[in-house]
Length: 309
Picture 1 (cartoon, rainbow, N blue to C red):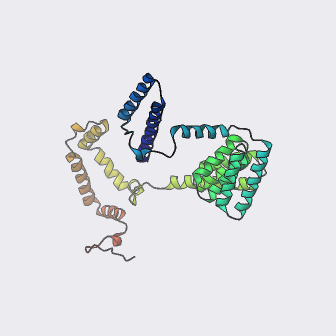
Picture 2 (picture 1 turned 30 degrees about the vertical axis):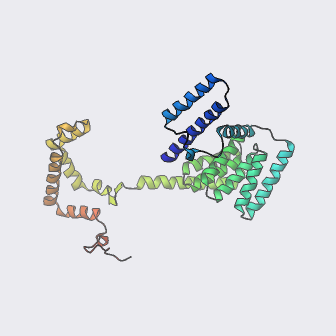
Picture 3 (picture 1 turned 45 degrees about the vertical axis):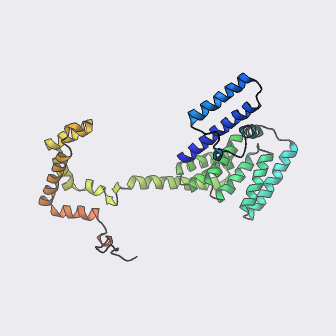
């Protein structure tokens, strides 16, 4: 992504430089021409762009790109005529029929044309979002739903459609919020009510599974450490060791220079391990089993897997 952004920036800089060079070539005023030449040289040096690097050239001039942008920006503010509204409806209906026949790309093209003709109708964006959702282009589907809601914040169907997308993406809280709004706007919709309940159920399940999950590290049950009273007691005793307390105090304060390397910490750990082995060898064996729950799957001496696939 970073490389792509750098390439885009280089192309933009190249386009600006080419624009200035074209202005310089058509300029008849010597002072202005000299200023433009200096500007080109400064940009080349500051942005490290060679004006002769043709691989940075894009298909259109900067003026053309800017003109297209302004036209596109202006189209979203235009008021469609009665004829354009009618044509947009016709294209939408054609797209609906194609969608029913599962001709998704053809339906998408019809909705694209409808939006071009009449960009003020929120239904066109909502219908196109349905196609994008079926095509699993969820980002575009979300964008279209938001465009529809920007045009009509009370559009219940667009809230419901957005909820369906979030539910598909396992974003349950967002789905709940969207369905709730859809139900508020259209209490008669059984689909939105049922989906709202489903999203709430999925959210509860996700929160419950997160709350009940034991912290783990590579399959090791961390909860085992905290549920074992013997291990907790031994850890408590270790924490009362003055040497350990000094090490931890230095680590917490960030003053690592007071810690004599890691030797002291390793020494305390070794003493704790020896104490565990001496006082409770069964506990040590339990820890080993926790760290290696599937010994039969370990790689053998010959490099092959112990269990055949």
